[in-house]
Length: 371
Image (cartoon, helix red, strand yellow):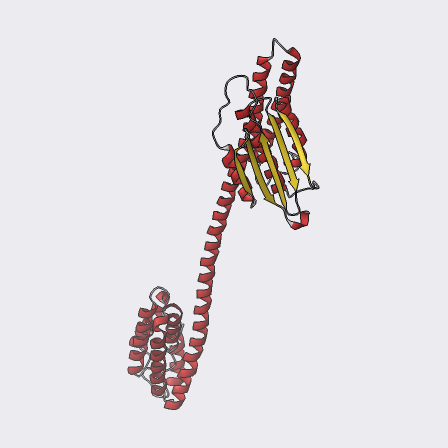
């Protein structure tokens, strides 16, 4: 297009003014100035040098003006955007080349300088703006990628926390219910001939305890099986809390423990996490009594609701007897208790009692709004 424009303007204007004919050398220099612009994004500085050299050669050969000066200007724009370290040199070189081209065309030097400064200044303004926009976009892309990675890490962390929570729940369910089943089965076998009614009661308690364990296990397994977008209405059982303490105590009594409950202060609804924590700690403490003190041990569950704390203690006298083989234990019960209570900012004190037996005492902070 530039070549066609040059040929037309030469015949219409520049021939009469005595300019050199736009011959094959002029066409070759014009192509040398413009064709490298195709590669200006890959090699901005090299393309800029080639375009400037071609324009200088074209001007020195006294070919008609106003044909090739725009190519170095475009190449200068690319250098400013993609090679900011060489932007000042490119702008100064473009200004000089434009002045040479302008004065060769007969323009006054001062006017040629003003023209060059205005054109190069305009290119500088838009090129620096584009460079700033590109840098912001690159920074935004980097931050977006970092945010995506952080979200993935948080998602993985949440999955790990959920797995730990489910593992803790499974431990509490399995340890408590299976310990109760083992003690009740041992009791039933121990009194099967001497006290048939007690044996039948123990077998009935085994059935009730096993059904409850199955329900809690089914609830936890449904959490693992449900897809993320599955309907959450229906398959979950209510989270246990201190409102189910009576059932827990009845189940422990059915296993042979002599459990007494003492509540001081005004009982009130607790936050779900704190409520579950307190329930599981009491459940684990009763399970430990079944494992280590045995059936017929006397146990006291004491709860005290304060203005800003819930204090509780589960203690036994250590005088029980456990028919059958000793129950196995992994030693994770007290560790789980401490982890649970620590999660909610509480404290735990577990150890032998001075007059015999074992006690687990814990304290959980309560928000002021629950008082």
